[in-house]
Image (tube, rainbow, N blue to C red; front, side, top):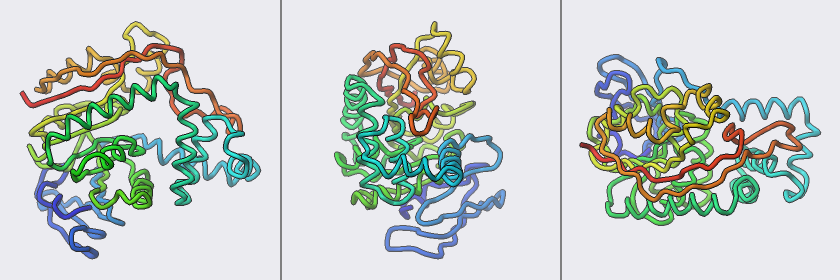
Length: 334
């Protein structure tokens, strides 16, 4: 993580001031060390340049770690399936299998092979119309943030699709975040291999309990991050606390009368964030002024299950064909 962040980081649990012990550093980065809260004595490590600001009081469902651990264990028990996934021409695989092959390449540090696999998989998992819709929303977001040279904090960055596009089109410093340290380790390797790491910091934290000081963030972005935060609670109040500027979120919304997908949404604990009117109400209650920009409606079908990895899926939603509304939410402090 880059050193400038020390000035705006605090204890995510009690908001106390942090004392820093740095054991490995460069001119502008902390590579290893520890931050300790002066008030509650909680400690937060920095390992391999990644600051980990996770607390123990919030329940989290780290699907990235579950998939990685589960896939590794599965291949130990079924080595012949690993060969069928990894040792054949990639165009002989189904889209879901291609996606998981990309994940295996990434875990091995084979970032270019991973990028190729993910690109091929996405063409089968998503329609051309959907890919164009998402890319247009990203371009709109990039145009919005290009008006400022402030650092950007990207929330729930996941596989860094939006981050990579921002790094290629903007000069800003960018903070890549996720609550899964494992996915940040992969992102670090990927960004280094692509020569995009110089302006990046990596922080692991829960968006419901961030390590940022009040009013310390000028630009907060996310691509589909809001839709995937389970049991959000006071999420939008917490984001309102830290932002003194703009929050720009690419989001997709389900029809409120879709009972089949709605049942899965409710079970997953993301109903407050997957329906537009409900989310806008929560934004307003938290103090935000939000505009809905750049909307489009795209027919979306469930991703097919894996063939080599029988029954495996990339996304749990949708479970039946629907029209998803994609848009950009532009939030500012009231």
